[in-house]
Image 1 (cartoon, helix red, strand yellow):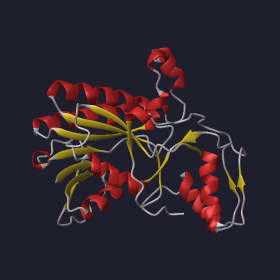
Image 2 (cartoon, helix red, strand yellow):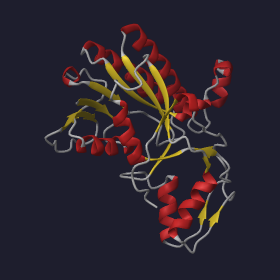
Image 3 (cartoon, one colour):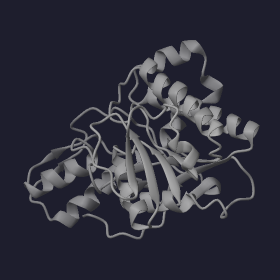
Length: 286
């Protein structure tokens, strides 16, 4: 299969590329970073993902992972809307013009922050400075846009809402899992939030394998477009997850909960009726 992949230089993208290449798929991947050396089945394209790439015409499926605001919890609404809504919508119309009619769009459980009944301009303005709110709003709006466009043009579209991802290659060092591993290895104490938030933690290699599985449009194909919560379906508190990792490392340090301010008390739980369950097939990196 020939895949046009955005966000290939990012955390999830790099792990997806590794998985897809093992399965002998061919990938076209635009990047704003310094162009890496292309391989037989991996062609790096220098430039923005929303350019009118002729490689889209050669592609069987579009996998859109690129987004703004994932690594900066206080990214401005303007920047999030520009990349996650305006440029991403342009990408979809480029795909339509290129006759690439199968789409996998990676979104986020952060969309759960948005309440349809409480989205007046005044309310949005008040929430603009909340962590990841601008990111969540821009992804929510793009999901609605993508679903509308796919209905209009009869596109086979799947929007996959990803939960907390950890492990694997190139995870940012300041994220929860790398912080736990680093502190535990050094036998240092680690200050954390209260840790009562509920989420579903997905090992990135399992996530990448399951995204690849969703490219098979012959499964779960009764009606398009589709929205799926892409997760394990296993809910756990941040505190319990941290303790589990810590116990595996037998660290002499301590986890210190509620020593720093919580920035997000939200719970993120998948919808069992709309769950595309991640197959946990890799050894967890504890």
